[in-house]
Length: 304
Figure 1 (spheres, rainbow, N blue to C red):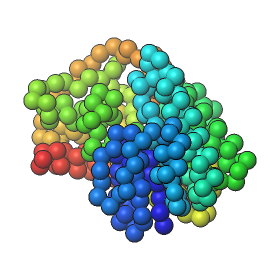
Figure 2: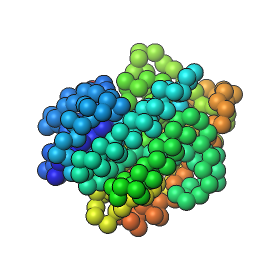
Figure 3: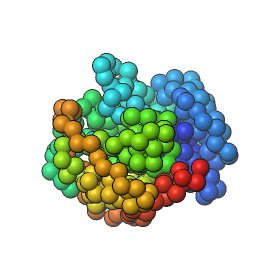
Figure 4: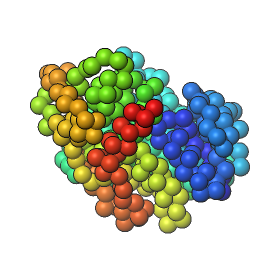
């Protein structure tokens, strides 16, 4: 089998590449900020560049579409570029996949689409995107589902919950808050900082390890998994006070948080995935608990 992974240098895309290689696949990797990866054929380009995408997708059986404008701050003050990448760029991927005979596209979406609706979040419930990032991902899903209905190309959308893992340093202050808490506690920049928590710290996140996300993507290639939307989370929530305690314990520190008034409009208070559909159809259950994942990151960072 041969696959194209867009966003191949990112936290999740790089792990998908590694997993595919481990299973004997040929892999083309495409990223606008490409980092070479052993065994991966490199293509440095944007998903909005039709000619380059066509070259990267040649002879591929599957496409794993991870490339995106991937966080809310990237949409402000002007959301147009982010929307164009996530909607028009994704449509380029879907259309070329259809034209070039790709068997299936597995595309990254986000739990941010749910906004502050009731939890646990279910794939068929009301959606209230709280920001332009989430709205652009919802538009990507809608256009992709319609494209699949018209063309017959299977497109599987995976709604990732709060993904974390080693390899987010280049994202800086738009990285997952778990990663930022770890950097603060370990003083990676040489300065002790208090992790900043909005409000009282009782807000929760369904935290899922990036390696588990890669496994869900791989399972989505199974023949019985057709076009549809699937939550990829753990089905467990951790509040931010608990998270900081877990990080302090793993790091052998006692760093306290700095609590500030929440400055973000439509801030998401809880995330928690209903994973029943994903377990039933994909056969996926997250393997890595938060304590285990945090320990693995801290061990690698301190060893380095």
